[in-house]
Length: 177
Image (cartoon, rainbow, N blue to C red):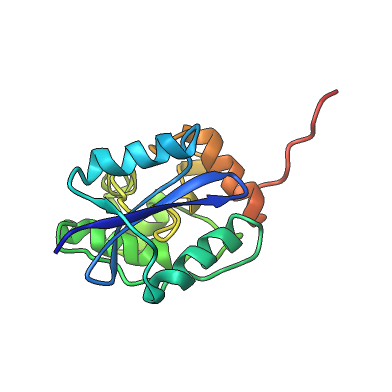
């Protein structure tokens, strides 16, 4: 079946959602514009077709918008198409999906949760390849010492920090005038 996608507005910019057979195959955090988000999705899914969001995924879009507006939302029930996701990544994503808004874990915490305490770097790599940012909240996964670590989405670590501030996990940094 064909992958379909949409681009929609949020308080931090245009996000994207791609789906197939009623399950999400990918999400895109905001680029510099809606056109950039669309290009990101088309680079990942070259044969995708832009389409209206099906009724079954309307709540997903609303949940993402609400979460990026500062409302705590649990997106664990969003159906994901995991057929191309390696098993270790699936397990790491399951742990990450259980992190509530406003909370964080480290890569090491997730490795421990998986019963593989030496695999923090592998957890970091899994988060770096997350095709479902926000739905699988890899932004809530930090490096050792609760440092931001990396973030492969557009805007990098600054986007990660901004999302954690919105969720209340990081304090708002003072504005200098």
